[in-house]
Length: 300
Image 1: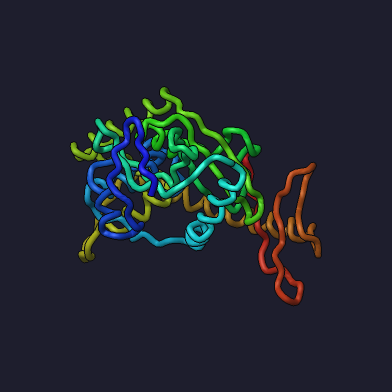
Image 2 (image 1 turned 120 degrees about the horizontal axis):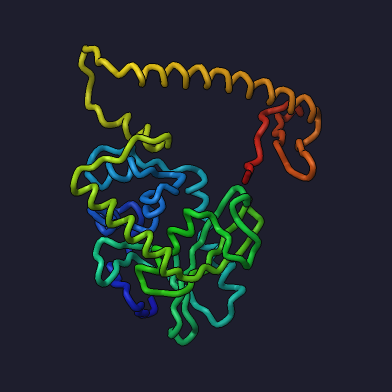
């Protein structure tokens, strides 16, 4: 491992994800790069509510890696090597877990350190895989999903670096590269939000319940057992319950209807399109009948 120094980063060590040492380096009252998007309400995987419970030491749902995560891990080395193949004069290595020199609670585990052959210029390399490219801009731009932008800014701020390269493989074949520069204003917004969040954990100020699935799953694991008793809930909550279920049923019925109409239009075709926009596509069984109708993700 090449010895590299960063302006404000202190290397804690290199740990295997999922091990007790890895959990300890990321645990306690600290905020990691993968958590900062949840702090500001921008993470698709965690909510402020679920993260608050984790930091408060309360029950949270067990971590269950998805097939997408598994393949992302399997492909990480190949995508990193693809980036290296196109950048002569650079070397890359696993980055390890770091903390900020003055803020012990600010932690980051970048995918790779990227450095020149002489080891003088240190940058970061983040490696991603994605099934869809809707949230990713043209290769060579800085247009990446906002939750990854939060992650990158946090990493740069932790280590005191100025540039992060992002290499992503979309849909298994569409390779793109991005360059993200350090933004001091964005970094300060994230730091201030993280400090307020950690203070709320210390003070026991639980975030409001929101509509994120991570929040609902966190609430599910809080009770330990069941008592045979009735619990009175507010009338206003009952009204919202009734309205939400009625709207859900109506939406489900309309969705089934419109899916049938779209599938009927496609017939034995592959994709439904409108004025250049891809709407949905068919997957088929071995006999050619429809297995499923899948929507394309929309950025609108």
